[in-house]
Image (tube, rainbow, N blue to C red; front, side, top):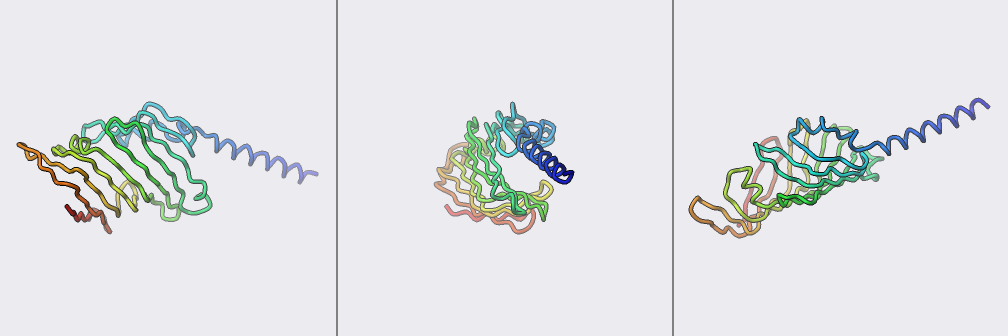
Length: 197
């Protein structure tokens, strides 16, 4: 009789623990302190750790505040049984005309993050603001894979397309057409750009 009671109590504790973990609010996992050292700010975090939204997200980069808008994410439950846990996400309502769709995975065995099959669309005016270059057009960056370890980008593969590309030399605008750059890096800080105009 005691063993049956112990099994029932153990099962009840397990069920309550699983429910508690599933109902863990996103704002308790992604606290303000976590974002402050990364130069990120936001107005609110809603949802749960496995599915939620960050509202009013912005990034401070070189003294410029870049509005990212709302960031949505959802844990891919199909990856739970593997050693490669993944989250799918996207942003919306960016005042800077930034649109992203991404897949971020954490490799448990190797303790590294990997970005897979992700797309970043950004207006060249936003890049001009942070780089000091006078450019216009639209950038679309397709990342087939990128590996991050200890906040360092180790490798990145993909392509960047600059459509309706324009560059200002200080006096007049030059139309460059569409520019394709191949991103390929196999070691730190060795990114190769091959452009086709």
